[in-house]
Image (tube, rainbow, N blue to C red; front, side, top):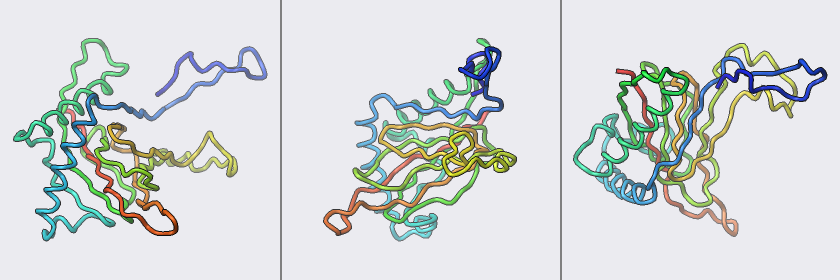
Length: 223
């Protein structure tokens, strides 16, 4: 976030100061009661994927994985989907209220889908047009998983002109957020993002089969 008056630091002169301009908001939180919710969601997605295993739609995901349709958060037939929608919407409203007037009342809609990535699965860099914010909620993360991290790319074209060497920490081109169950992340939909390849950990030189990486991706639309 842009910082006004909070960026003073020990510089070469008492009047020296530093603040961030045009900061990109990044919101993260943990859903209350996510352990029980994630267990229920994992069972539901496992059954749904098994039923759709021979479907053309089920095979159309990039990399090695599967996804549901885009109407996941509109499902009202099961309590787990209703609780998930309510939790995500609460945090989305909290994010968009930041720095707004007290009278500001966001009218938001969510559109989401579940993404299941097996070993080797990844997602190429993309953005989500026609929405205000995008988010990811992590349902299942295999213990010891390597890779499968969310990569957020610097959205400013001109920022790539600055290079301060391999150890530069001010102008990194991207940031990695590695998942954990229950973690929710929200960011502007115009931020380019991708998922690094999921790698299975090695034990005694042999590849060990692990549970899948399951996440719910969603868009926040101002209605």
